[in-house]
Every structure is written in C-alpha cells, then in structure tokens.
Picture 1 (cartoon, one colour):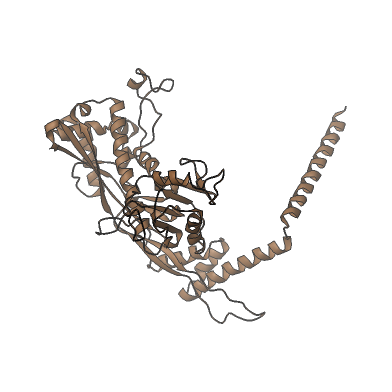
Picture 2: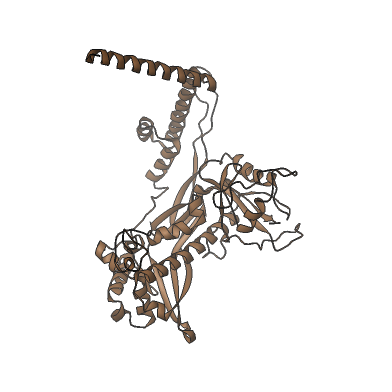
Length: 462
C-alpha cells in the first residue's frame, strides 16, 4: 500500500472514530436529558446575578471602579465585598511572620533536640549544646520574646529527619549513615497525628499577634424584575470577623537520663516523634471539645454556640440519628467541603454492629471498618480524644456517654504562632533520674461557620 493510501486509510479511521465519539456523546446527553438551551440560559442568569450583586456592593460603598475590575476578572461577589472592606480599613490582612532564621541545610541537620534537652537537663546548655543555644538565641531575637527553655526555629520544625541509607534504611549499618529520606518534618508529624487535620481542618501558620478572619454573614437579596424596570432596592452582603489570639498549649514527655546522653539518630527520631505526638493529641482534643473557659483555652467544635444538635436520649444511636446529623448541616446549605463523621473507638465498634433497620442485614451503619469507613457515603475518623464520660438526664447509663460530630472540617481553623518553646525539668522526678520535657506552643482554633457542624453529645456505645 502506498503512503498516500496509508494516509487516506488513517483519515478514514480517524473520521470513523470521531463519528463514534460524537454519537456516544449524543447518547450520553440523551441519557442525562441535558437541555443545551436551558443550560445556556442558566449560565447567563448566573452571570447576571454575579454582576448585579457586585454592583450592589459597589453602589453601597461607592466603589464602581473596583467593581469593574472584579467583574472583568470573573471574581465572586464575596471576594469583591472583602476587598472593599479591606480597602476601607474595616478588615486588615492577616499578618504572618516566618519563624525561619536562615539556617542552611547543613546547619538544620546539625541541630539536635536530644543534645539541647540534655544540655538544659545538665544545667550547662552553653557548653553541652553550644550550637543549639546559638540557634535558640537567634530565634528569640527574630520572634522578639524570651524562651522559658529553648526555642526550636521553623527551619528545624519543617525539616525532614535524616537517617538510614536508601538501600537499607532499617539496618544497623544504615542507621549510622545520614541520608536525605524517610520521615516527615516535625510539623508534618504533628499534622499526621491530628484527626481534625486528616478530616480537613485548615491550618494557619507563622501568625503574629491577634488575627481577624473575615466571614460573610448575609448574602445579597435577589429580586424579580419586570422588563425595562430598575431594581426598587439593593441589598449588599454583610460581613463580620472571627477573632483568634494565641493561647499557650503545654504538653510533656518524660525521658530517662540514659536516653538523653545518646546522640544516635534513632534516639533523635524517637524523642521528636514522641514530642510531636503529645502536641498533636492536645491540639486535637481542644479542637474537638475545648471549652473556651477560661479564656486561655480554645473553643472546640462541641462548645461552639450555634452548631446543630441531635438527641440520642442516652441510648446507642440508630441510623436515623446519623442521618439527622447530616440533615442538620444540609438544611443550612452547609453540606459541602470536607464532610466527615468523627467519634471514638467504642462508638466505632457500636456502629459496626448496628444496622440501618431493626431486622439487621449484611451492611452495618459503619461500612468498611473504622480506618477507612463511611456512613451514608461520608468518611469517618476515629479518635479516643472524645471520651466516654458525657452525661444526660435521660440516660440510664449516666456518665458513660459519648459524642459524634459531623460537619465540614474545612470550616475548623487552627492557628499556629511561630516557634516551639521547650522547657526541661530535671527536678520533678529527680529521684529516678527521669527528665520531664515540656513543649509550649502558641495556638488557637475556631469554627468559621457554626452551621457547618452538628453533634450528638448523649450517645451510648452499647
């Protein structure tokens, strides 16, 4: 066959493929019953509403020039509204400051948690850990505050631990040779251990001072307008601010003196992992159920005023209760984003043995098990930070109840201020040679929209 014949054959094959593709698309459109004209009209109406809302805000604040820019760039009315308030000084941008002090990769690898802790425990920080002291002093100068123990800068908190070899990372010989690989940074270790972060909570890092986060509390009104008739009135969106201020988190580990005199990379990893775990557990606990009282304690989801509530009456939840948790959020038009259920291990075991109907069946309420489970199609996360010590007037098992939380975890915001302050206490357990290591971290958490969450706080697990 000649080249020309081959080319013609290819054209025929492509033409046939294209025709089949068009037919398939038409068939799919028929199945979905898509009305192209109606879709065009919907998009046109959506764009008209967007422009109308932006202009309503612009007229209220005399910002037509800025409005034209946001209209042309396809921005949402909410973005324009926040830009107007920021321009007029009613909302200030969130100020952040990196806790980095400009350490090189070599210097970051040289910093050792264990050496710094041991230096303080022995009462000779300058001699036993001169490099770590220099780094702490530089961090203190950058942050403008004095540590209670020593500061760990963001350079170190975001570095990956270096240990092992690419070919044999867990062998004895490999553990003596430093290579770039393996574990996550200290900050990532914290995040991986936080259930709320896994569920979708947002984190703000490197914060400075108190911050205000804008949120929309009311949308622009919509009107039906007759042809060739102007709007009789306009209604702009309304905004408020969510405040967050640093609250000091304290978590501690207890380490033996013999452990601390070791400088192996394995011991460094063990201490670092344990510290990250303690911080993560405490952030998780307060983000879920912090009371907000006194004022130095964050307000968690369960203590946030205005979230939905489902009454389980002190008995084990049934299928309807789990659906009602979703429904509470859905009726507020907040059922989007990172939606998930969060509960403890006892509740997970309970829901794996309960069924959507009283006659049982093959599929329990919690499908797929506790690690990768779903309830009515939404993800589930298990944490024992939610205890079995809730009480209820209706409960026959008073004092042994628990909570289930459902919501859009994107609307849970965790703020973290730069630097971790590590205080070493060699005195509390001096009789047995144990050193207490206290980690202090400034953080806060807030729910951006209460409508995004619903919870039951009087559910039994059996």
